[in-house]
Image 1 (cartoon, rainbow, N blue to C red):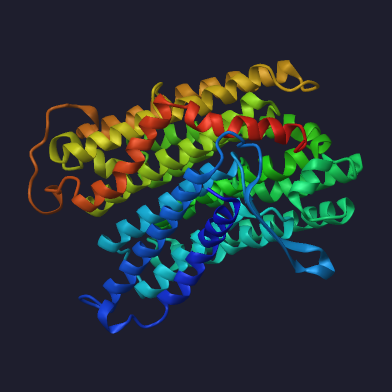
Image 2 (cartoon, rainbow, N blue to C red):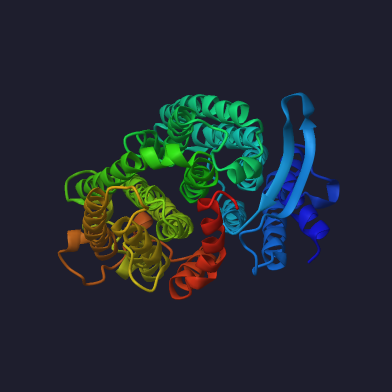
Length: 529
């Protein structure tokens, strides 16, 4: 595919959701209303996100897979000459998988919402916010100017705030405020770091700064920049101990909000470390790498222990909250891989990013379905004698939940395995100049985290799928009312099947993703040269 065609594809991928958001707020044309205006606007959301997904697949198909380290589909035009800010877009092997993942998850959320709209205000506002959120996330992975990156990074905050505050469940307003305050405060600090890099480096162009590889930035400037930018990115990642906004946000958010928050928004933070911090301020990144790895290792253990506590009988643990805390642990592996500053660790981090998006997105879809059927996601209620017992009452739903759990714990042959393994391999032999004994300790803690993850995930499967707190594996007979749930519905099957298939595909054929990321990672570590 020609360079011009790829340019237009990437620009359309970023802009189309914004145009769709504006169109969603307008009255539906008479011939497209269907049964109701609400149905028309939800169908509009499916159409726009489907078109964006098709364009992203076309971009991936036209991408030169023989040169994934080279920026492709680039657009570079002046926007604010006085500040030397340019509209610079492009994708390489690092950003392309995240772009496609975002388009896929947003389309599946729009499809799911068409049949199961969250209770709340007007569907028009819901669809418009969903599309603005998609545009901001796609732009984050596509822009190559520091100021545009910041604007795109911030663009997702307001839509997610309203999705939680207006369409969420119990405690939604408090959760939404915590989300916006934490992320905004982190972003203010990050902006100062980005401005420092741009002013001292003489440009806001990320490719030019990466090519300079920090040569125009003094050591002290790099230290300050990495600390400031890293703090903002760490809040979004989420890195322990800056994670405390996440469980409340996930617990209160509607199902599609949780899917996008875990599957896409968390990746913006880790992507920023790889795209900005490592190549632009390598000395500062090297100095702070052991601290990042230490926080990551603590996060892995902390997240797993909290999940074990929530999973035990009598803890009144919420299943959505448990999956949220599991994200703290899983994203800890991503941060650990980044902190090794090695190709192996970075490839593991990028692979784990995609795997977490697929698997945790699926898990939040499944937990939402369980909550819809039983009116609760409380583990004690779901595992009681009159609880879910999914193997007997809804075997397909139970089987999918078990699949998501074993994928999340890193079963070999599924996507969750490779990223975590490569991150630990990277910690086994970190970059030159980093303390190997310290990183071996972090690797051992991460290995313990995998065992704890297996423990709490199997406890969840035993309690929710078998019922009766595992006292009996005999299928329970469904009663009346809420205890006679339907199994997987056709629209749920359509929304979940791609995630299951890609989880298996990535697990069996990791080279498809690693072949894209590895050359780009090697180049980033060399400073874009």
